[in-house]
Image 1 (cartoon, rainbow, N blue to C red):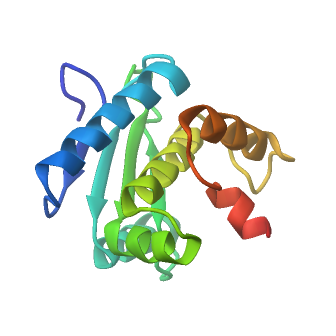
Image 2: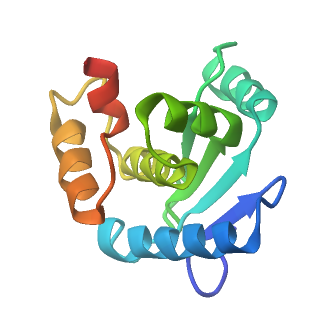
Amino acid sequence: MSSPEGSTILFRRIPGSSWRRALTVFARRLQKEVAKGQPFTCLITNDAELRRLNLEFRGSPDPTDVLSFPSGAVSSHLGDLAISLPRARAQARTYGHTTQDELRILMLHGLLHLLGMDHESDTGLMLRSENRWRTRLGLPNGVIERVRS
């Protein structure tokens, strides 16, 4: 559920107030610029919860880094994201940037899915959009680029 100010970030374990502030500011920027004012909620949690959600909603027992749950209703709330903090930390190490940057990359990727994009079937639309927004937002390589390389 979103707050009156807009998009909300929820943490299972709060990593620190500076993270909370920085990611909330980023989520609100995504809401304003990418989602054209539509709020969303983002849960930052652990691998076990992402695995459980992936199995329950997608039928896949595999771990994952980000899941998107569109609201599906006629509402201004786009839906919910769930991101694995341990997976974000590992991916940040692998790709040579900060965990906060990786969380931002995953948040953008998930938001594009909430907006209806699907890189598995859209012949490059989501890739182009992710690249454009990633550049505007000053983020390192995106999820789709990494999978393709």
